[in-house]
Length: 64
Image (tube, rainbow, N blue to C red; front, side, top):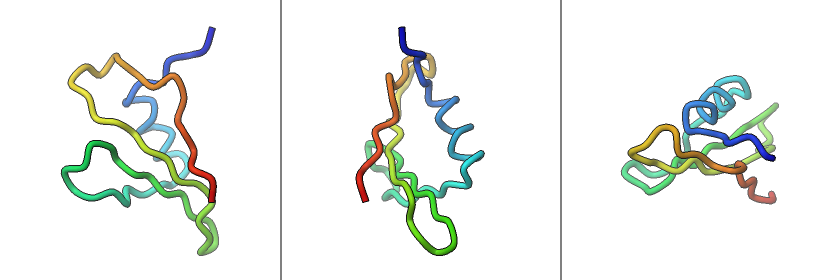
């Protein structure tokens, strides 16, 4: 069974990777970008939700 990735865990992952929130304010999802040496290496979304225990079964990564 897959581990549920909650928003809290997703935010910890973003901090560890040094990601930045590049999404529009008030959007349905936070758009996170991870850059290394001036090159965008990953981009993914973290959805907003009222229940912090409901999670993402995965973090979808957009192909670059």
